[in-house]
Length: 216
Length: 410
Image (cartoon, rainbow over all chains, first blue to last red):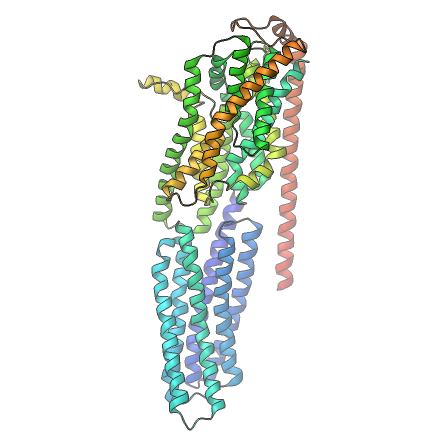
């Protein structure tokens, strides 16, 4: 019994640590994009390194959590869904890492006049991800509160869409001196930032269904 | 020959173990919360304990219904019940060994000209309805209580499930104990009046003649659990409606409580002391009680997922099982008596077959049965130890492979 209690405690700690990793990853993304827009490349590179570390740690935790759930037959009725949730959350931190790397490799030339728009898109997208974490934690402790927490995720996701549509309109309709390749590149970068909130919405949909099943 | 007569009871015990252990550990094993091996070992140990410690009360009631006073009669009655259970199971009709044995005893009463005690019969039949209803009521109350605890405690899902798993093991053990206490009468009850074995001194305690038969019956139930219940547990776990882990825990606990209530002499005495009517010591069907519990939870949750066809089948089983078993016992007794010329008992319930008494009281027979019981107990303990060490070895190998995986990944 003592062995089993220890396994349970370890698994809870690992799940919490995984959520912490995603949360920190989103924070690093926010600071990283800000550093890039402020042309502070030293801070930007530091944030990329941090994101890579967090992503690798999240991958290890994901494997370990899934392994422990199977080998110790923990949460047999919820195992599939919990694994899917962790998988979708891992996609968020994967997107964080890959988007920062794209900034680093492709060095998109973002006009200073669009800095505010890019920061707004990034803030809304990151907020969608950040609001997801308390809901995911709540699934394990108080599933009754999950759905109300998810409302903010959906709000920020639609906000991200709105701001990015507006920015794309500015790029393609108002910036006539910019060439099409440049415009397309900026649009491509915006899409990558948007991916965070899209993944958050995907996780929110899953979490919402999981919470109903647990409460019933 | 005497031991050969017991085989029909042992067969009935085996089929009871094979079918009814699923009511206790079916949900836990079906949902992979508890491994089959662990469930089977726990169920076996506690079924035997319940049968030996607390099996007497229920057996007395069954004896009042019809005291089968010849070994040939006991054999035939138990065989008719065992065949009924087998056939019903084969045709997938929910069956109760309780109803089969009651039908068979009434068949014996009719054949031998004994009158059936209507008061006892009414008492038994009314608990067939009261058992599932009481189970449903207890299950709903426990379910509401557990849900309230879960909602207000903000306990982590992983920890909650680990408590549920521990709860399923503890409640399963209690359920197995109650099953042994309540249902051993079905298996060995008909042999009690016809057998008179010498007391068995095991050092720490002494087993009476009835307790020795209960121990044999308990071992037969355990054999049924260990050899055949895996398939039943894995397939019938969620037959009536899909159960969450907490609903499974509640259903098994409610079922165990009902079986315990109807087999606990001290609880009945306590009721009498409080000025309440005594609780009848009656064998109830564990299958039907757990179905009652699950339906109770289902109704509380809104009756959306209940398979109502099963309800109709249970109602049909209430009527078909005792009638079929009674008719089968009647005709079997006719054949056994007239073709094999074996005494199946008479119409004076106070006279017990003197030949059987003298044979079973023979010290050599007692010794054979004692050796049989001891060797089965030793074999059981050896098997449990073997499985324990096998399990431990597997766990160590698994841990080593895990450690190797993470070392290589680094």
